[in-house]
Amino acid sequence: MNWKDFPNLSREGQTGYVTMQDGTNVRTATWPSKSDDKGIVVLVNGHREFMEKYIEFFSDILNRDFALYALDNRGQGLSDRVLPDRLKSHAENFDLFSDDLNEFISNIVMADPRAQELPIYLIAHSMGGHVCLRYLHDFPGTVSKAVLMAPMVEFNLGGAVATAVIKSIIRLGDALGLKEKFAMGQGSFLSKNSRSIKQKLLTHDDERYAIEADIIEANPELYVGGATYGWLCTALDSIEKIKQAEYLNKITIPVLVVLAGSDLVVKSQSSRKLLSGYDNIDIITIDGSRHEIYREVDEYRNQLWQKIDDFLK
Image 1 (cartoon, helix red, strand yellow):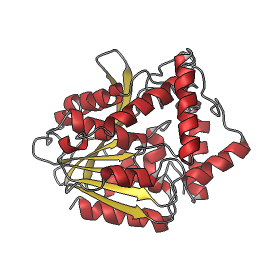
Image 2 (cartoon, rainbow, N blue to C red):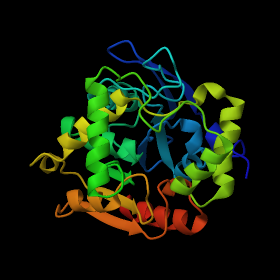
Image 3 (cartoon, rainbow, N blue to C red):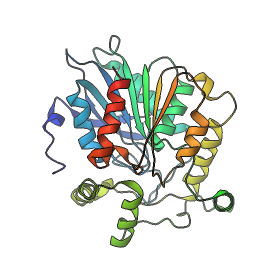
Image 4 (cartoon, rainbow, N blue to C red):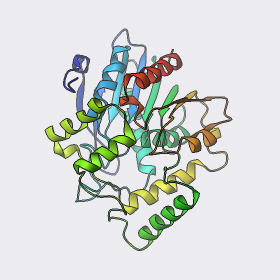
């Protein structure tokens, strides 16, 4: 499989930039609706990701007769980076991600000629799933349904003691003025050995995983390294926000949450605990799948798409 060989992506699609209210330029891709499309999908990717990673998933969406809109989150991909050192994944406030998504949907997606008649669906992965929870809470009324794949509800930092210690270190590093420094264990580049370790966290599919390296080799500007103390600290703040009492009650649209049964990046059990008990939220687990279900082996990807297809009927 070659990442360049997805002909559907030439379907009147185009990339560009949208300037947010604070002047940040966010890279976007759009495939506006056709007369026979069933709906509009807005895809929100995860931490350190870029749209090219989703090229096969994009093709799957277009093959299902949906219009498609996507963006690189600020601070990653070809969107503006926050710090002069573009290898650092940094964020000042997680509120900005949901604000960006709202601007994108309000100003770009809703400008689609058929946006008033077609349902709008969110599909998001990991950090993108977290951003969508924030967006659905803060800006209700536009999206009809949402699919959250392995949402970032809680980092997988190990057991209770290890989690408490690591969170304390993150908070301390931020308080000591290290917010723009790489957090412990984070760095700028991946060695061959660390790439192997990373794959074991993300997917069983060697070929799909290798495509990412090909994409970055073709365009190194897409790459961003590890997270700063500041990124991690504001992410923890946002995680605490979505866990507040009554927070999720304000999300009333149907939501499908797809958890990875062998997720080592986020805690699937925390997602299930937080999101269970709501009549509008359906939670399923794909046993055996690693974190990036959308580029897993076909055994798991096919299960993912069966659930999405049923949900978006």
